[in-house]
Length: 189
Ligand SMILES: [Zn+2]
Figure (spheres, rainbow, N blue to C red):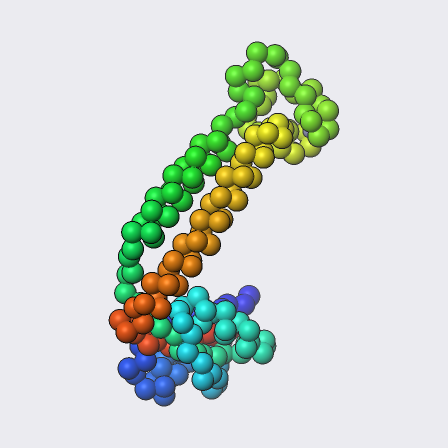
């Protein structure tokens, strides 16, 4: 097996101390207590955790490469826009969940339902979920599946909007941010 972890350290500590701690953690999680050796220190400061992880991934040389870069960590940032987006996402997620878990053919009057994919006639009493017991494909009508897809699309759009708003807030509050190290360790376990 193969383990990858991302460790966060305060930049107030010296790099030597941080490196020693990360190597110790890596050894303790590795199967044979194997020391990772030096950790590559990248001279890059990411805007946030997410970007730091992306950057580290882009610089990874594989073969148990252990490397690190700095990033800004912000306090919990709030805004009216963010709150509104969060509420909307929550609402749509509930709507999606309710729509998705409903057994579509639970209340049909006919005693058999035919699967649109494999044409099997399924006895209604055996319909306990929305997938065909024969071919396993979703038996719900296209309109229902389209509505679910549309809802999911809306949720994805809102998530993008949320990210943009969060980035804007982070830029505005860069002075409140703390500089941290993100260290990626990789080991055999
Ligand atoms: Zn089927």
